[in-house]
Image 1: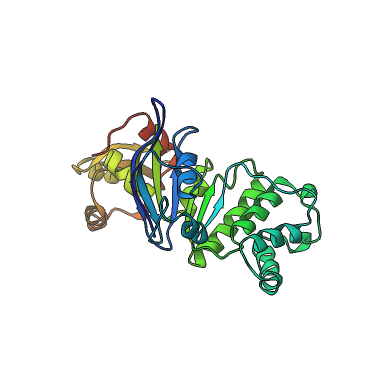
Image 2 (image 1 turned 90 degrees about the vertical axis):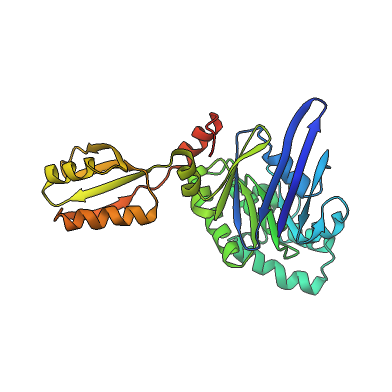
Length: 311
């Protein structure tokens, strides 16, 4: 669906984007993570045909961004990190204007606009002027605007930026619904835990280069090769400690303050993790729960952008 090949953007001697290669399959939600100035918005602007690359290219649904910009625009819905709204228009008028700009007939617009307003939870504001909407409502209205021509691909640059917690939750739920509708979504965000929850795959970009790509857990595994395992016991704590300390894939075992919970780092694959649990049960260790701790995306991001080298 989206194929990026050696995409580069330079401004004089400064390289904003350095030989980016990336493939995003149809129906995927891909999260782009990076500090301000890392190259996220540059990438999005190029994909939206608003900025020409210095070298390299990209294809969206088979169309070349440089050679077929009109066809590319018909395939995408683009929501920039900074956007403008026409304050003297009502919500319905705003969407009607953009629908007409995309060549939709009046009958098509009359059918589609109420559906879009319902999708973004703005049906009750259809006759309100845009300038009286809250920031969260304006964000959702701009998302509806990017959907007016039913694009297959959504390119959303910081859609949750500046929103309060309630508005972020509303935006996240809308994006989940769009995912269920089969849209291919490329999204950037600084709300990292929400991005991890929402995305199938993430890419971490630093100083214009893609430094990691995959699921959060995959990236963490490549970084450290270790998983944090939490084991809650029903008695027999000393016996359990001796058992786990004797396992060659286990390190840094500690006992929590509750006295019945152990945690340790495990350097092994899923099959070996299952084997460890089976072996513990065969030793009559009374295990209530045995789980892998969820990876924290902020920790992954900070560790990678400090210059940790992936294997």
